Amino acid sequence: MEKEKAYKLLAVQMGLSNAKAKELIDRGVVYVGNKKVAIARGELPVDTKFRVLKMQNVDVIYENEEVLALNKPAFLTSDEAARAFSGAKLLHRLDRETSGVLLLAKSKGFEKRALEAFKARAVHKAYTCWVEGIVSEPVTIDKPIKTVKKNGHAYSKIDRKGKDAVTHIEPIMISGRRTKLRVVIETGRTHQIRLHLKSIGHPIIGDRQYGVVSAQTNRMLLHALELKILGYDFKAKEPRGFDVLTGG
Image (cartoon, rainbow, N blue to C red; front, top):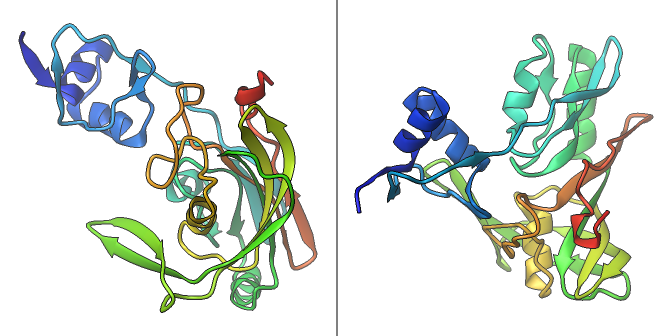
Protein backbone atom coordinates (compact mmCIF):
# COMPACT_ATOMS: atom_id res chain seq x y z
CA MET A 1 0.00 0.00 0.00
CA GLU A 2 1.39 3.37 -1.02
CA LYS A 3 2.12 5.75 1.84
CA GLU A 4 3.12 9.39 2.30
CA LYS A 5 3.94 11.74 5.17
CA ALA A 6 0.81 12.88 7.05
CA TYR A 7 1.40 16.61 6.63
CA LYS A 8 1.87 16.25 2.86
CA LEU A 9 -1.35 14.25 2.51
CA LEU A 10 -3.22 16.82 4.61
CA ALA A 11 -1.81 19.68 2.54
CA VAL A 12 -3.09 18.14 -0.70
CA GLN A 13 -6.47 17.17 0.77
CA MET A 14 -7.13 20.60 2.34
CA GLY A 15 -5.43 22.77 -0.27
CA LEU A 16 -2.85 24.05 2.25
CA SER A 17 0.87 24.69 2.19
CA ASN A 18 3.02 21.93 3.68
CA ALA A 19 4.03 24.31 6.48
CA LYS A 20 0.42 25.11 7.39
CA ALA A 21 -0.55 21.43 7.31
CA LYS A 22 2.34 20.54 9.62
CA GLU A 23 1.36 23.38 11.97
CA LEU A 24 -2.21 22.03 12.27
CA ILE A 25 -0.97 18.53 13.10
CA ASP A 26 1.52 19.88 15.65
CA ARG A 27 -1.30 21.94 17.19
CA GLY A 28 -3.28 18.73 17.81
CA VAL A 29 -6.39 19.48 15.78
CA VAL A 30 -6.05 16.87 13.01
CA TYR A 31 -7.79 13.50 13.30
CA VAL A 32 -8.28 10.31 11.33
CA GLY A 33 -11.60 9.00 12.58
CA ASN A 34 -11.45 9.42 16.37
CA LYS A 35 -7.65 9.16 16.55
CA LYS A 36 -5.48 12.27 16.74
CA VAL A 37 -2.63 12.49 14.23
CA ALA A 38 0.32 12.95 16.56
CA ILE A 39 3.34 12.89 14.21
CA ALA A 40 3.32 15.19 11.20
CA ARG A 41 6.09 13.27 9.46
CA GLY A 42 4.56 9.88 10.20
CA GLU A 43 3.53 7.96 7.10
CA LEU A 44 -0.10 7.12 6.34
CA PRO A 45 -1.90 5.45 3.41
CA VAL A 46 -2.40 7.92 0.56
CA ASP A 47 -6.19 7.47 0.70
CA THR A 48 -6.37 8.59 4.36
CA LYS A 49 -9.24 10.99 5.08
CA PHE A 50 -8.56 13.68 7.67
CA ARG A 51 -10.81 15.65 9.99
CA VAL A 52 -9.64 19.06 11.24
CA LEU A 53 -11.19 20.59 14.35
CA LYS A 54 -12.52 24.13 14.08
CA MET A 55 -10.55 26.60 16.20
CA GLN A 56 -12.55 28.72 18.64
CA ASN A 57 -12.05 32.48 18.79
CA VAL A 58 -10.17 34.33 21.52
CA ASP A 59 -12.78 36.19 23.57
CA VAL A 60 -12.06 39.39 25.49
CA ILE A 61 -13.36 39.07 29.07
CA TYR A 62 -12.40 42.57 30.21
CA GLU A 63 -10.30 45.49 29.03
CA ASN A 64 -9.36 48.92 30.32
CA GLU A 65 -6.34 51.20 30.03
CA GLU A 66 -4.06 48.93 32.12
CA VAL A 67 -5.20 45.33 31.74
CA LEU A 68 -6.60 42.91 29.16
CA ALA A 69 -8.16 39.60 30.20
CA LEU A 70 -8.79 36.93 27.55
CA ASN A 71 -10.61 33.60 27.45
CA LYS A 72 -8.02 31.54 25.58
CA PRO A 73 -9.37 28.55 23.63
CA ALA A 74 -7.67 25.16 23.63
CA PHE A 75 -5.12 24.36 20.89
CA LEU A 76 -3.77 27.92 20.84
CA THR A 77 -0.55 28.86 22.64
CA SER A 78 -0.61 31.79 25.02
CA ASP A 79 1.80 33.69 22.76
CA GLU A 80 -0.47 33.14 19.76
CA ALA A 81 -3.50 34.35 21.70
CA ALA A 82 -1.64 37.49 22.80
CA ARG A 83 -0.23 38.25 19.35
CA ALA A 84 -3.51 39.71 18.12
CA PHE A 85 -3.36 42.44 20.77
CA SER A 86 -0.39 44.62 19.92
CA GLY A 87 1.05 46.66 22.73
CA ALA A 88 -0.19 44.29 25.44
CA LYS A 89 2.34 42.11 27.27
CA LEU A 90 1.68 38.54 28.40
CA LEU A 91 1.90 38.17 32.19
CA HIS A 92 1.71 34.37 32.49
CA ARG A 93 1.03 31.31 30.31
CA LEU A 94 -1.41 28.44 29.95
CA ASP A 95 -0.56 25.15 28.27
CA ARG A 96 -1.66 24.84 24.65
CA GLU A 97 -4.65 22.59 25.40
CA THR A 98 -5.68 24.48 28.55
CA SER A 99 -8.46 27.00 28.00
CA GLY A 100 -9.46 29.93 30.20
CA VAL A 101 -8.31 33.19 31.78
CA LEU A 102 -5.16 34.66 30.24
CA LEU A 103 -3.92 38.03 31.45
CA LEU A 104 -2.03 40.76 29.57
CA ALA A 105 -0.74 44.12 30.78
CA LYS A 106 -1.43 47.28 28.77
CA SER A 107 0.61 49.64 30.93
CA LYS A 108 4.12 49.44 32.36
CA GLY A 109 2.80 50.27 35.83
CA PHE A 110 0.30 47.42 35.87
CA GLU A 111 2.85 45.03 34.40
CA LYS A 112 5.31 45.78 37.22
CA ARG A 113 2.67 45.46 39.95
CA ALA A 114 1.21 42.29 38.47
CA LEU A 115 4.57 40.55 38.13
CA GLU A 116 5.33 41.44 41.74
CA ALA A 117 1.96 39.97 42.78
CA PHE A 118 2.69 36.73 40.91
CA LYS A 119 6.11 36.52 42.54
CA ALA A 120 4.64 37.16 46.00
CA ARG A 121 1.90 34.56 45.39
CA ALA A 122 -0.70 37.26 45.92
CA VAL A 123 -2.78 35.88 43.06
CA HIS A 124 -5.77 33.53 43.34
CA LYS A 125 -5.91 30.98 40.50
CA ALA A 126 -8.77 28.49 40.24
CA TYR A 127 -9.28 25.81 37.59
CA THR A 128 -11.76 23.08 36.73
CA CYS A 129 -10.81 19.72 35.25
CA TRP A 130 -12.02 16.18 34.69
CA VAL A 131 -9.93 13.32 36.09
CA GLU A 132 -9.97 9.55 36.05
CA GLY A 133 -11.32 7.86 39.17
CA ILE A 134 -13.54 9.00 42.00
CA VAL A 135 -12.40 11.85 44.27
CA SER A 136 -14.89 12.01 47.13
CA GLU A 137 -13.37 14.66 49.40
CA PRO A 138 -11.06 17.71 49.29
CA VAL A 139 -7.33 16.98 49.11
CA THR A 140 -4.21 19.13 49.40
CA ILE A 141 -1.21 17.96 47.37
CA ASP A 142 2.10 19.29 48.65
CA LYS A 143 4.88 17.77 46.53
CA PRO A 144 7.98 19.52 45.14
CA ILE A 145 8.35 19.66 41.37
CA LYS A 146 11.43 19.63 39.17
CA THR A 147 11.11 20.68 35.52
CA VAL A 148 13.46 19.68 32.73
CA LYS A 149 13.37 21.49 29.38
CA LYS A 150 14.79 19.84 26.27
CA ASN A 151 14.41 20.68 22.59
CA GLY A 152 11.76 23.28 23.37
CA HIS A 153 9.63 20.87 25.40
CA ALA A 154 9.13 20.80 29.17
CA TYR A 155 8.61 17.75 31.37
CA SER A 156 8.05 17.88 35.11
CA LYS A 157 8.42 15.25 37.81
CA ILE A 158 7.97 14.95 41.55
CA ASP A 159 11.41 15.40 43.09
CA ARG A 160 12.32 16.19 46.70
CA LYS A 161 15.04 18.51 45.35
CA GLY A 162 12.52 20.38 43.22
CA LYS A 163 10.66 23.62 43.95
CA ASP A 164 7.80 23.66 46.43
CA ALA A 165 4.35 23.20 44.87
CA VAL A 166 0.94 23.16 46.56
CA THR A 167 -2.37 22.25 44.92
CA HIS A 168 -5.82 22.11 46.54
CA ILE A 169 -8.57 20.02 44.91
CA GLU A 170 -12.27 19.68 45.65
CA PRO A 171 -14.82 17.45 43.88
CA ILE A 172 -17.65 19.18 42.02
CA MET A 173 -19.31 16.30 40.18
CA ILE A 174 -18.90 12.54 39.74
CA SER A 175 -19.92 10.82 36.51
CA GLY A 176 -19.29 7.08 36.31
CA ARG A 177 -15.67 6.51 37.30
CA ARG A 178 -14.63 10.11 36.60
CA THR A 179 -14.67 13.28 38.71
CA LYS A 180 -14.89 16.95 37.90
CA LEU A 181 -12.68 18.98 40.23
CA ARG A 182 -12.21 22.56 41.28
CA VAL A 183 -8.48 23.18 41.65
CA VAL A 184 -6.74 26.07 43.41
CA ILE A 185 -2.96 26.41 43.19
CA GLU A 186 -0.73 28.31 45.60
CA THR A 187 2.30 28.02 43.30
CA GLY A 188 2.64 28.07 39.54
CA ARG A 189 5.11 25.37 38.60
CA THR A 190 5.28 24.03 35.05
CA HIS A 191 2.52 21.41 34.55
CA GLN A 192 1.81 21.54 38.30
CA ILE A 193 -1.87 20.57 38.22
CA ARG A 194 -1.34 17.85 35.63
CA LEU A 195 1.59 16.28 37.49
CA HIS A 196 0.09 16.58 40.98
CA LEU A 197 -3.15 14.90 39.90
CA LYS A 198 -1.24 12.12 38.19
CA SER A 199 0.83 11.64 41.35
CA ILE A 200 -2.28 10.81 43.41
CA GLY A 201 -3.68 8.42 40.80
CA HIS A 202 -6.20 10.81 39.21
CA PRO A 203 -4.69 12.00 35.90
CA ILE A 204 -6.51 14.59 33.82
CA ILE A 205 -8.55 13.12 31.00
CA GLY A 206 -7.15 13.96 27.57
CA ASP A 207 -3.65 14.76 28.90
CA ARG A 208 -1.38 12.91 26.49
CA GLN A 209 1.80 13.66 28.47
CA TYR A 210 0.74 12.86 32.03
CA GLY A 211 -2.78 11.52 31.80
CA VAL A 212 -5.31 9.46 29.91
CA VAL A 213 -6.36 9.79 26.29
CA SER A 214 -10.12 9.41 25.89
CA ALA A 215 -12.15 8.86 22.72
CA GLN A 216 -14.86 11.03 24.31
CA THR A 217 -12.83 14.24 24.16
CA ASN A 218 -10.40 15.76 21.68
CA ARG A 219 -8.55 17.89 24.26
CA MET A 220 -7.11 17.94 27.74
CA LEU A 221 -10.01 18.74 30.07
CA LEU A 222 -8.36 21.52 32.09
CA HIS A 223 -9.79 25.05 32.20
CA ALA A 224 -8.49 28.19 33.95
CA LEU A 225 -11.75 29.32 35.51
CA GLU A 226 -10.81 32.34 37.63
CA LEU A 227 -7.92 34.69 38.33
CA LYS A 228 -7.93 37.35 41.06
CA ILE A 229 -5.16 39.93 41.12
CA LEU A 230 -4.69 43.52 42.38
CA GLY A 231 -8.40 43.97 43.10
CA TYR A 232 -9.58 42.44 39.81
CA ASP A 233 -11.59 39.23 39.57
CA PHE A 234 -11.64 37.66 36.09
CA LYS A 235 -13.73 34.59 35.22
CA ALA A 236 -13.85 32.60 31.98
CA LYS A 237 -16.81 30.42 31.04
CA GLU A 238 -16.00 26.79 30.33
CA PRO A 239 -16.06 26.06 26.59
CA ARG A 240 -18.92 24.19 24.99
CA GLY A 241 -18.49 20.46 25.41
CA PHE A 242 -16.25 20.68 28.49
CA ASP A 243 -18.72 18.47 30.37
CA VAL A 244 -18.86 16.02 27.48
CA LEU A 245 -18.32 13.11 29.90
CA THR A 246 -21.79 13.74 31.32
CA GLY A 247 -23.38 14.55 28.01
CA GLY A 248 -23.48 18.23 29.07
